[in-house]
Length: 445
Image (cartoon, rainbow, N blue to C red; front, side, top):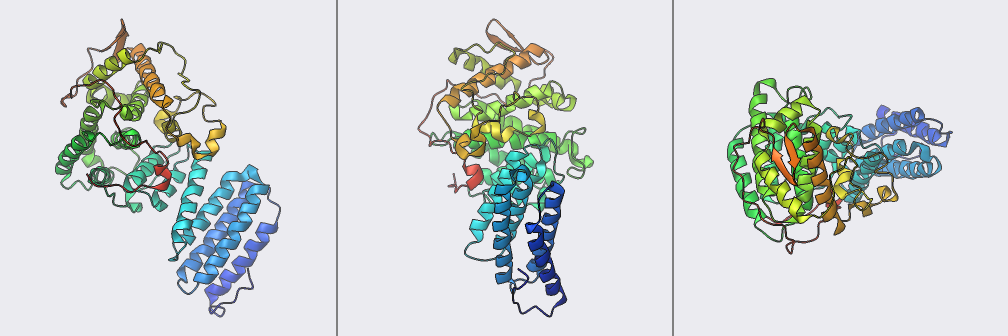
């Protein structure tokens, strides 16, 4: 590496770059015996990439040469020293990230590689929020997916403290998604101009789109639920991450986020489409979490659309012939649902999944995101089981004589309850969870 010729050889900063290149080459040849060692290598690479980036475009050829050489060496060490898998993945990710910042024909390829390497890091460390934050920053996916990754970064068991303003959120093609992302951006940045008008338009567009029988809500419903829950939690006084929400506007943003979530919930849960089940599943997981967490419980008790949920559960109960009245986690087809992998690591899912639930061969492949017909039944089973667990506590729900009822102490939300219909499967396209990794091209409503 140190023998690369360049027009900057007489420049002090280029001399420093050549010196660092030589040190990195030596480091790669040394014996790898700790993550501290790899962290030092990471810092050295970051230093030289920063300097090379400042010399662009004149250093384009040298930068690519350095990145490719380091990437190849890192892959070799990754294969020889798998005990330090995450550390090597981080090195590969930052190399690909910088390659993707250089205008070239291969730019999108490098960005895809960087996104995948950070996704691999998140898979190995699902409770570490920084890897979701990196995905949100560099992904070429839609703005809705970026919003999800940002929400997961601040809601992870070990959250990454950051502002959504640091993430350049891409403009979704679908107007419904565009308004949804804009509203959440406003809630996280306190820039609340015209939010009531946007919320009204969001509900109108959502209602219209839900009448389209060819729309599959499996993935979008999941994303909506996680982002809505994050907005509510980030406005809870005892849970809010410092620096994200100003206390003076907290009451208003909490009211807005609660109103938005409630109105979306009423529309979604009134659907006769089984593709809304992941959405309901996510909310039931959060409701169970609220049993033991005071601030979340306050919202759940007095701000949630209990009337709509009760009617949904009792309708679902008549459609499924299963025994869910047990303390044992419903194993279903003994494989995690696609949304399980994406929920893993969030603060409010801790304790939900049984030990070893994610230790399978599927964890290493995208096959875990393939939607299967059996998942519909598994989700119904999970939803009813979660509802039964909540009813066992007796704080909000009760279950007696094959019927769910509401505890008298719970205040019904004022939002209108839509009439429920029996489930049926329309001719909607098959759900594709891989779009969370690859992005998608939406058509407008």
